[in-house]
Figure 1 (cartoon, helix red, strand yellow):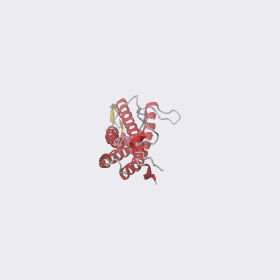
Figure 2 (spheres, helix red, strand yellow):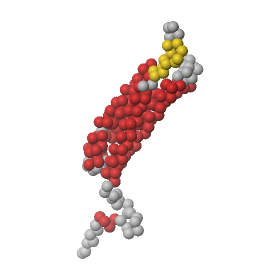
Figure 3 (cartoon, rainbow, N blue to C red):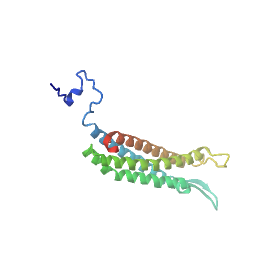
Figure 4 (cartoon, one colour):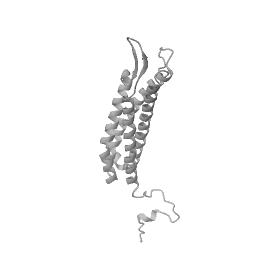
Amino acid sequence: MSTIDVSESSKNIGNGRKVPGAPLRPGWKKGVAIMDFILRLGAIAASLGAAASMATSDQTLPFFTQFFQFEASYDSFSTFQFFVIAMAFVGGYLVLSIPFSIVTIIRPHAAGPRLFLIILDTVFLTLSTSSGAAAAAIVYLAHNGNQDSNWLAICNQFGDFCQQISGAVVASLVAVLLLVVLIVMSAVALPHNSYL
């Protein structure tokens, strides 16, 4: 009785086609880890930029009376205060997650750091999504108002303030998108036997 020994390299067929089950190129996980690091830097910039833009939004109208001065500031709205705090937390977490991202570059097959990043990225994705959505609702009301609840559109008078808070909301949604991509990439690069 004769046996045929088939080596791993014979899974690739000569025409460049691959047989199902053939392993991917060995460096792809390191490439995913490098892309994770780059996207994490982008998410840091977006989240901290959103927090800084919202926290510095302030406009005072040039006319006032003896008793009233017309001013719009982020701290006039509790939703915007929540937004600033939440996005600052998200940016702080992303800064603190950089060493774990570097570990995944150095050790691309390690499951522990990737699983840790997936769990915490999901938690902070939830926080950034909720704060961005709440702020977006108030920005919509500031632009359009609501006749049923007698909420007047303030962006006709406070144009600079509205532009700045709108930019902050857009930056937060960019951070949300980058966090979603980070979670999906980390999940794809996670070893399949680490789910158990």
